Figure 1 (cartoon, rainbow, N blue to C red):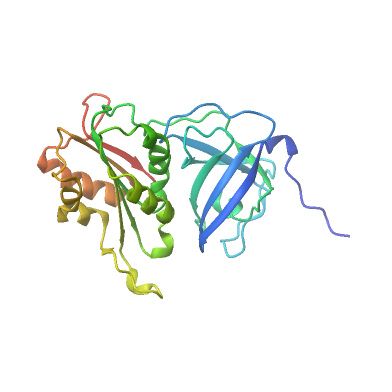
Figure 2 (figure 1 turned 45 degrees about the vertical axis):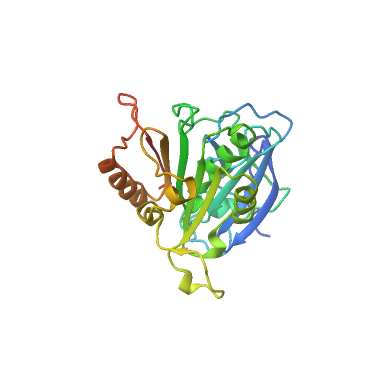
Amino acid sequence: MGVAEPRPHPAVLNATLSQRIDLAPGLAIMRVAPRGWTLGGFAPGQYAVLGLPAAAPRVAGSRPEPAPADPGRLLRRAYSIASSSRVGEYVELYLNLVPGGVLTPRLFALAAGDGLWLSPRIVGTFTLDRVPPDRNLALFATGTGLAPYMSMLRTLLPDLGDRRLAVIHGARHASDLAYRDELEAVARLADRVTYVPILSRPQEDALPWRGLVGHVQDVWRSGLLGERWGAAPTPADTHVLLCGNPAMLDDKRDQLTPVGFVEHTNRQPGQIHLERYW
């Protein structure tokens, strides 16, 4: 007779995976809803913490781990929220599977209806609190760094006013462009919203890519935003948010500094705001 595997204590699992959309291998959108409690308010750009017990299974194909010394220990990681802050029934997260990671291999083993842990408090400082309400927004992201921008756009769109907003999303392949249909639709309907996807490895895709090729830094260098907006962004009228690969953040900051943009810190207000995803 075999020994039963330890099961997580049900009290730990205070939320449910209510929906899962697999976009590409190792890339998914997940909605997580609280079980028997109500989500608190949050600001677009903040993050939630998800958790699963160490005994939770890992998805097939991920790197194996030794048996946990404490199977009931809760493994936790922070993930930026993509859903609007106007929605209180769930949080939506845009996740990339890290095969050797601690939590994402366990999250990708979940199916709709499965339980997990969700932090009651939502926190984070990568928000628009320090951006004047009359400034344009240029939002640059790589990969899943798009998530906080989706929350910002979905929340701000009804009250965007005269400010312009651009979402520039860099990915390797077309299948990695999460939310592409939604962003293209918003850009068609709202003339003050610009969406610019750019791919670094479109030659590896089965279908031809007719959009931009390169990296998000190339979009700024090309002057495309100035063409779409009717005038080039300047430190006087635009704040730039950078989220994703640290190499992109550093390159983009170095690209902006010579033209007068300043990185925002607690001691020195500026127009460049960073969120490192690795």
